[in-house]
Length: 280
Image (tube, rainbow, N blue to C red; front, side, top):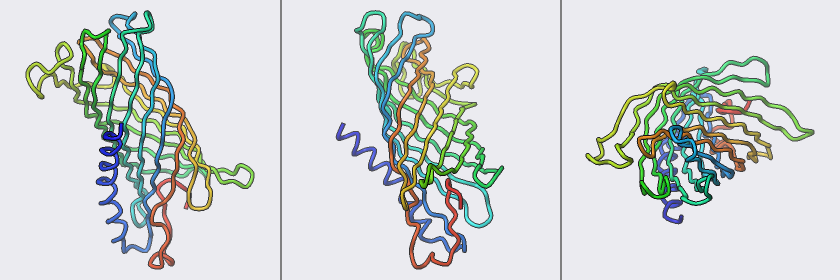
């Protein structure tokens, strides 16, 4: 677990540095701080062998994720989004209570969205995203295939609704986002292992043959320059532990912190502040 956390921290640092460097060099009259959120997701998961329905696993799930968003400079309405996640779940076969399975997944998503304002407090974001997903499934089917691989690269659609309101004197931002991969290249190893090396098993697919979807409902409670994030995450994934198709569904409670990095400095006192997510 410590090694995984160190690797995750290094990945987040490498991803953040170029964006922070770009933010420092912003000479436009509009200042665009880097919106960052750190989330912990805890909940349950189930995954089912669609060809052999009695192979159904129930268990727990958790993930750690980092989100970074930044609005484009000037009058442009484009917003850039990065999401980096580590996901883990474990469970037992529902029919017998044994034959456990454990999954380790890594996920990176890059999205570009524009938005429309329907009223002062409501904005709808929409655009395309690139999703890179990969990991391992261990001890599936009671150990017949001790280690199986899952990986795919997808291009799809993402949409987000953001609404600002007050809970008494407390400002709150409510947000729902969905991501739906449309076209993808994924790996489906023969018999669950790479018999012919890393190039074995790669295939093309689309949403109708391997349905994936992510749903996020978050509430950011604002305290001064930072926010407490509470919410719900749902993942629906299709992957291949064997030649059979598995459907994975997770339901997680979200707690985290969010805010705009590098928002205030003397150099930016006279600039218009333009944030990626909150009203400005």
